[in-house]
Structures are given as structure tokens and as C-alpha cells.
Image (cartoon, rainbow, N blue to C red; front, top):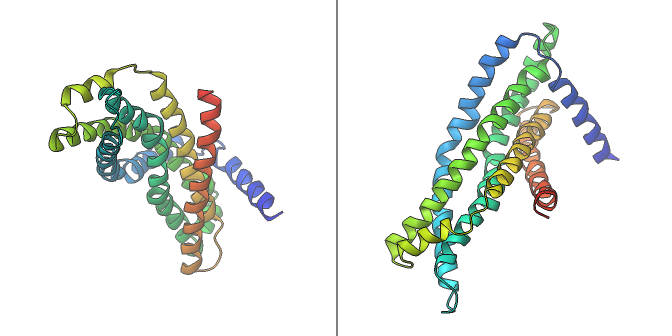
Length: 246
């Protein structure tokens, strides 16, 4: 029953979040601030993790393919499809759930316990819409760019691993990443990214918005938001994979 209550309260909050804003101009400015805070500031961690994961995927695939009957260019194909299908959308989504989700739940939770949200309500401002909607729009808009960047950097990291270690000829790897390319894989990853962006922003925001108590409870709400959003990302990853690739 507690889970059903939480789900009901979540959808009630989302109804307030996606209601019509009072002043569009004010929301536009807030959206650009959130794009910088939640999107642009996440580029560094996405690039670093993607380049190393691309390198690791390539090297592990190479060292586990000892059969001389298997062409070496399949290593490049494996690295490319792994980045496109799973890592650049799902794994980056989980990483952003930790980084962005903790930021959102802590910020909104701090505003709740310091009564800033109550002050907005007294002034007649839809606090849920004003605080959460710009974050949702910013992540839905910018996270697909992070996913595309992760794809490119991950494949590039695999090529760097080939060149620096000599595990695979560069020509074989480059041929592999071009072989049997399916454009829908990119669209599939971007669709998942948009869904994950909504989860990453709304779930931690819900936990922070409804926090009660002090700083300790804000920390617990932040942890709850990250764990819940991570589980939902994995769940929707399975659902979307079944719907889009079956």
C-alpha cells in the first residue's frame, strides 16, 4: 500500500509540474540555467567514462576472441554496437542518475526544509512547476547530445586502445565500426535517453520536494531518489528494448 501511495503522490506532483507556467519568460531563463548546471557540467564525466569504457570493451573483446576463424573486424563492430545499444544510453543514464539526481534532490530538499518552497506558494507561484519543469526540459533537451557524444568518444576510445596497444590493426577496427551499421540503433538509444532523462529529473525531484525534517532527511531523500531512479532506468531499459527491438 505504501508503494501505491507513493506512486499516487508522484503523479499528483507531476500534474502540478506539467501544468501551464505563469510567466513563460521566467521559465526560459531558468531552463538555460539548468542546461548549464545539469547538462554542460556533465560533459566531462561522460567523456572520461566513455573513452575508457570504449577502450576496455575493445581490449576485452580482442583478448577473448582466440578463434582464427572469427574475423578481427568484428571487434570494432562489437565495440560500436555495445556503445550504441547499451552503454551510451543506459550506463550513462545510471551515471547521470547519481550526479544529476543527487543535485536535484538535495537542492529541492534544502529549499523545502528552509521553507523557500512555502514562500513561493504564499506568493502564488506554482512551486512544483517553477522548480522541476525547467530541470525536466533541460535534461530532455541536452541528454541526447550527451548520448551522441558518448557514442563518438567511446568508439574513438576503442580505436585509441587498438593503436596504443597494437592489439588490433587500425584498419580492421575502422572497417568493423562501419560494417553492417543499423541507423535505428542510434534512434533507439535516443528514445531511451529521453525516457531516462524524465526519470532522472522527476524521481529525485519528487523525493526532495516531499522531504520532511532537517539535513539528515535531505541526505536520505537524495539516496532514495538515486536508488529509485536507477532501478526504474533498468526496468524501463528492459521494457523499451522489448518494445523497440523485438
